[in-house]
Image 1 (cartoon, each protein chain N blue to C red):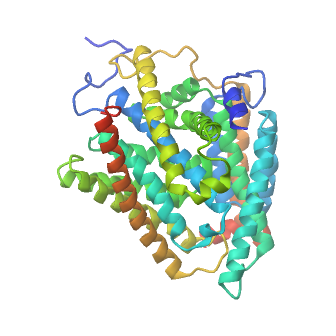
Image 2: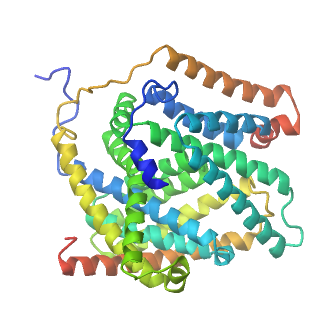
Image 3: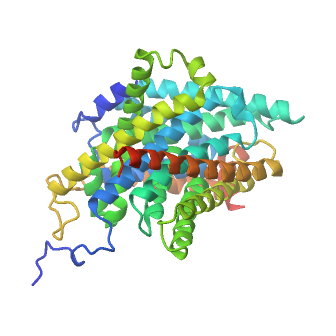
Length: 262
Length: 193
């Protein structure tokens, strides 16, 4: 799955409505979704999941969407099981907990996956530079965000190599010898990362990063009509959500905001 | 005479991070995120993840091992602050956890200040002590999430928090020592000088 994801990173679909948005609008989308998912009312969170699923499907991330739903379901089962075993009361509201973990967790994760998938490293750097973020922050952040899927792919490669050489035959084998597996995975992972960092630093220096002159972007960040519409919609949704907490004093509609404000 | 295209700051000085160092910090931060994700997913699938404090200990071990390599490769004041702020932003984007992110940033700043007061990242035990300080602060602040919001709606048990902090401290010590051995081995082999 991660290999398909890395392949998808190399593609550019500017004709897609959501993918063609300005990177700054995409970053704003992530922050609005995160804020509303944490502090927004339950009804908003359900709407958010619908919106985020639309984003994920438009970017072809349906496998990740299914994986996220299955993983959150498993996490819910484990946590509820543990809480019931450890405490007599168990989880206070298992159904609410399930909705919360599905809505909140998946909304945030899938929006982040959408941002990473549909944004090129170069565009991300240009957008952050245009927001006047210092290079000491933009460079590590862009590298880290971009390299998370690449390193996941590297880990897959290391795991395949261990299996081919017969060092690890199954996950159960790995569970029985955690130290050996950790050594065998960690050493190539760190060395590969150091080499990747060297290659990337050479490429960055060749492209003039860290120099005295300000770089001129080939594809500058600019707001178009649809960017303005999406930005207005995001601010409108946030304002509506906050206003609903004060106008409608209902636990279901405005529970989370009341909890945070109160 | 300066042009409109010129950056306002002076040319790179020795106190400023080079591109190579910033890229290395970014890549090692990504490695830390990936290793922790892989280990967390693996531990969630087996019942031992439910033992209080163990998860925090293992996460601390993994992250501190990579952070030790980062501190040794880029021994400058501000390395952990930049790396952990990056990590915090990545956590905020990927998980939306405000307290976790804040804990990482505060822990990184505290570790850097501690290392600066102890004369920088030259001493190996200084790095390990700075990592323990970082991990304890990060875990303590992250636990505020449960205290303030109780998002998981599981009844708050104070000794779970104490065990989480203790587990993180122990994991950080072990991770730092493991990182030290790893770097020593790599330097002896001449592959990570």
